[in-house]
Image 1 (cartoon, rainbow, N blue to C red):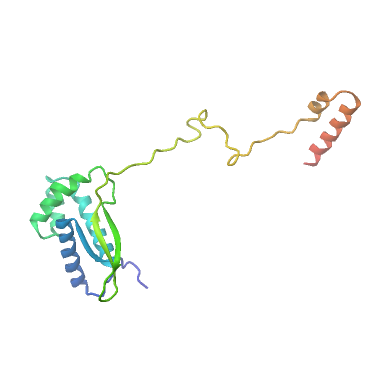
Image 2: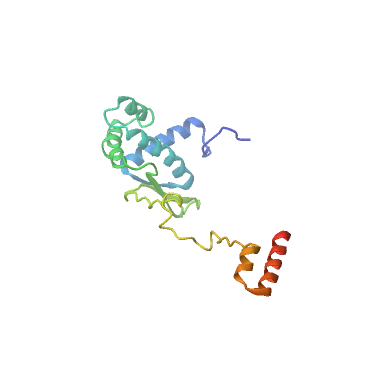
Length: 180
């Protein structure tokens, strides 16, 4: 069982994996796009998104800069992250990167992907108002809310019909009401 063992092992020791991911995320931040295997791209994406989130705190936050410097050892790349990339995504709540699948590699047929930063602005969908807030704008929808039909009482049925037929109908309605 792999309880509390997050992340992919990538067939490497932990020190090799840590060094490889540091190098890949440094290159990714520097070039803003890299091509690698699917598994490595997914691991680098999680690390890169965490670093971008930390960099959104601002260039003046020394603790944030030191936190990023623990992973990315190149000061020029950290400066780019804090001065260019972090401010670009200040209004975005997450999802700074995308993975685009590419063809398989020729040598070993490994599935390749391109990891890149998202450049399109974030567009939120309009929030639908709830029924209890504005009931006038939303007419009753027959598909979702069936209309409740009330049965007339025995007296109402008798009043609607006149004479002996009305009395008989009132008795029938009264019997049906007792049964249900």
